[in-house]
Length: 418
Image 1 (cartoon, helix red, strand yellow):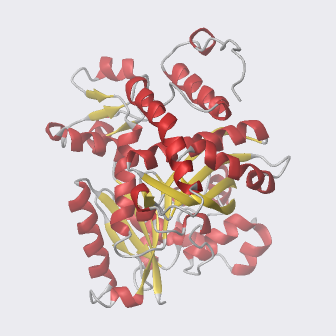
Image 2: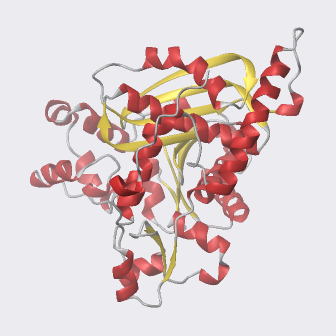
């Protein structure tokens, strides 16, 4: 094939980001979280700490364990940097999560390094020397195989799955560890004698087409080396020149007001990052995700550049109405601002409209940013984001063992500003 799919996965990512801040914690047992363990170092895992373990229990069982609260902005910063380094080698990148990326590597680029293995090692060394933390890299013909490859030798792994070693690798992958195979599906496959990925691909195509639903059949084809899943079109952009915010919520919902609020909150997050870097955009995209392989996306080109969430949401309202399907349950929203440009480089138009837009929003948004820096990002925001912010605050209070009804008192109605 003239191109391969790369998957990059962070090693104990949250803990690694914290250890990068505090080098004295390297190779030490470390737990990240407030009321429960959200993440932990490999050393902590070996001692028996697991995700969602109550922090009080961690302290009681391991009194000398290092415990640090979560800092999501820090993790997103490292995730953005990962994408920017990968963008040195390819402009076809899918940011799958804060610490995971897929990317397309081409044969023409590989030829500069001699072999796929050399190309992979070059990128890995560049990423890890730039960020100062380790990642596991996997390269293969398909998305699912690339995901298998990245997890094959964790942590700090480097695996290229080719025709010559695919059988060997798949024999060592339990069926329940395959990306996209849930517990119920794994149990059903085990009942028919399928214990690992190799036994899964040895099933006949006619059997798969007859008895498996479409997503599972697609996994089978991908593990056989036939590309079915492409990189998400919604994120096939140069991430070095874009900002994005994606949030998954549980349970999935068809509540249009809540989903619009989630989208509004994503817009506010991205706009804050643009203002922090003094960047603006007029190329924006919104994403609604139902399931793993069911993503809806629409792109909008605004007439003028801005980094104000109010300006952007005015243009997105009609697009959201087109994208949203009533009665459909969504579990994730996303917002992408691409083709970012420095605010100082934007030329004014004949009637001074562009300059007025930037200057008018700059005045009040600078006050918003000051309040955010002093009191936190959720201290002030758009009313359209309130439902999403309240849900996140409620979840945080529950995690901390507090009653959301007591701590989140209802806001008094003070009127509207026109």
